[in-house]
Length: 80
Image (tube, rainbow, N blue to C red; front, side):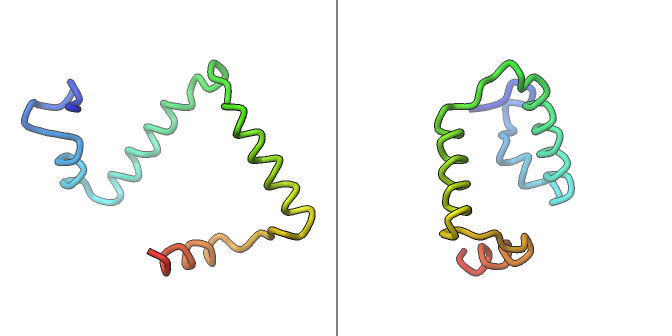
């Protein structure tokens, strides 16, 4: 789908290819701010609460533990 704010020849993918990583991250941050501006108007799906409850129970029972964020990112990068 072409965004009406872009020219007819430009697509989001084409614009993204031209952006630097820093520009992409700034854009993503601005999108997130915009999307969450009116978050009180939107209810989270019920499965969010269910998943948080399941995760909390798994942590409390010792089935799950937290790891350092840097170590988590390294682990994810090794898998991809």
